[in-house]
Length: 280
Image (cartoon, rainbow, N blue to C red; front, side, top):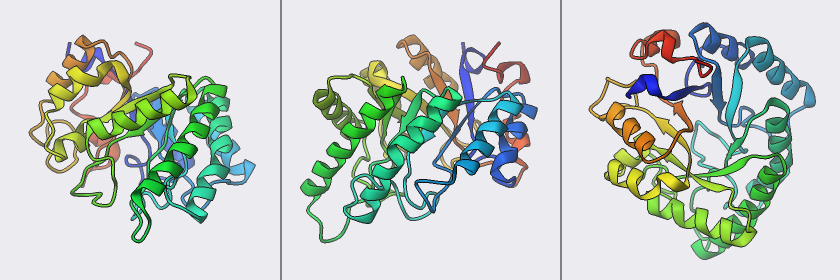
């Protein structure tokens, strides 16, 4: 058990960011990984030129890395935004324009998980109206994901770093998951269990795992405090991942932490090289 019993992928939107996007898959492969994930890479547009999509696809293929998770358009992330789908007006329109673009790109590279960040509360807008818009957009996204054989992920963030984001507990994210599945009948909406965010919210992560492992479609980790690599904080990450495995979760574990002052490649020293390849 422990780290050597997991399937890890590297989030290329927080690691290897010292490199241009097309060079990051090869850097992850050089570090021993065969799987990666990404936030939506084109923060300025939900509909990038096909040439940019092709460049990323070729970078993944030539490096031998598989994309296992992709965010839908989420506004300025990293930055002040936390998603677009519940934000009325232009941002919601951008999310809708992105749905098929993201789903089709995911299909082209064999990615089977699409993450839809909910979006911040907007001053002067009724939260119930935002939730109604969110459900409408999430239903559309779930159907697009199903069309390409993917799941739709709903993520809880943490209140200290995302004070305007309404899903800041596991239960609040699960409530949205259940609403989307009830509306579509597809059952492909799942919980994205981010250990760092849950711990920042003061949740009992072990209890969350026990309660929601069956509804979990993806897991992300970083240590706390600091959002650094495992071992830089105080979270019992090996123990928590063992608990996930015992609860029946056998999916991907996304490494979504900050490398700190070291080059990204040096931030994996905690993980034996023979445990990094998902093909082992």
